[in-house]
Image (cartoon, rainbow, N blue to C red; front, side, top):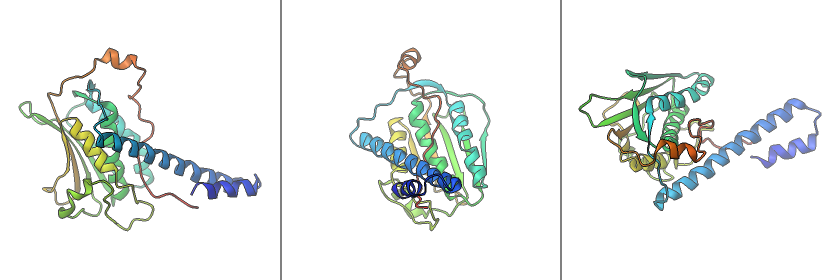
Length: 239
């Protein structure tokens, strides 16, 4: 997985630079996946022990959704999946924890792109002024998740085998994402009313109060405006 490619590099020297480059790429990808898995396990344990504390700060939620969307554009092009963001607004302020929302969206989008056949759509739905909820919806045209498993997929370590080589995950992503949604006083669910797509919906309340001021948040040297690595949990490569 990691030791194998490294051993091949050490044995071959630098005679075949193409093989060396390929092996280094495998090591890099597998290292990133193990790092992501470790971080995900730590976050999961924190939510289990109610140690995961969120910092709610007034944020342009659309900007956050749009920036996360842009992170996945090259991945969608690589997989030849049509990926579009739909929204009636260009700005929407809401008190959220930026890092937690990014984790949720990254998990939903990466799953959608991994298992889509040809199309993934991301919807930013603010609703009417009288509605108390805002919804972020991720639709994927991949193989449909059976309705009877609509809740089980959020259980820790539960996975559905869709027979896609290299796409097996950890079984923790959706469970962690739901826990983070609930810590926002919101919810995350698979919409059983949508029959053509796997439609995951993140609902957030519009009247969430700030729990930390912007000046304090920025003074802690926490730069969460950029999320340079997103979580795609595939099986490790061996060659």
